Amino acid sequence: MSEKGKFLKLGVLDLVPVFGSRNDTYALERAAELAQTAERLGYSRYWVAEHHDMPQLACPSPEVLLAHIGARTKRIRIGSGAVLLPHYKPLKVAESFRLLAALYPGRIDLGIGRAPGGNAHASMALSGNFLENVGQMPDKLKDIARLLQGSYTYQGEPVGARPNPSVQPEVWLLGTNKKSAEYAAAFGMGYVFGQFMSETDPGEVLRAYRESFVPSPLSPKPKTMITIGVVCAATDEEARRLALSGGSMFREEVQAGQSMPYSERKLLVGTASSVQARLQELSDLYGVDEFMLVSMIPDYAERLRSYELLAQCTF
Figure 1 (tube, rainbow, N blue to C red):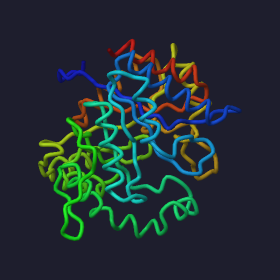
Figure 2: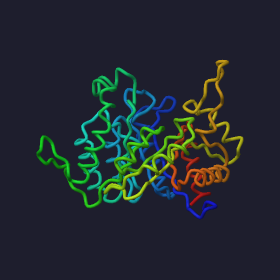
Figure 3: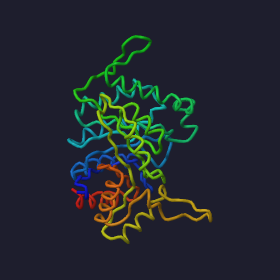
Figure 4: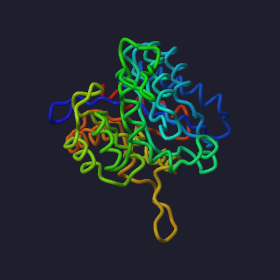
């Protein structure tokens, strides 16, 4: 529990990495194992990310993988971190996540992003002009909100996203800057700051979101989370070794052309107790009581162990 009396809630963000000589099928099997382990340990959520034509990441379709994960878990919330809305028509996204919400009532999160999720040619092959699609983001978010609230029309005619579940998906917008925070606030959605991808201090971005938040049927009050990288081990030395072995996504290039080991702003490294203490500090500093944790330790067993150690210290 943090000094301000809030219990931290921790979730898992899985990029579904393909490590070493393993293949995509093996990585997807480990995704299901991670989700089941997270549920058993008491994590609040398990989310999967969307990427395209990236050989080291195995999930281009979160909604398909979530259907698989939902059938192999019972209680943990499952969701996307994120569905990349510029690529898609809002109706299809709403239908997919309403279907998941009907299959797994009270457990589905629709996390939305606006990144391409791959290289330029993959983006063009998927949805054409990505910059043009990103420019339509406010309209697409408005349509998502209306579809989930049952008030969407097309050319003046009502169109519904079926099925209509008893509990709607929770909607979150993911980002790393004020623009994404402004969108989340304007449409009454939860907001997740992607600290593991950014050197920006989240304080100002989260404050802007809260100050401009407009209550909606999707969320009557502001909801915030931070996604951050974590590497836990039995000792600080072992944690640093694991971070150095798999921290390429957290590295910083310096002017001399050398790489820093990893960014301490993006990645928390240490024993479970030291990482938990740092999470509590961040919770008090930024006013959040829930974090999504991503780990890229390039060994599936060690990655699982990292989540296990932190859970034993936290829950």
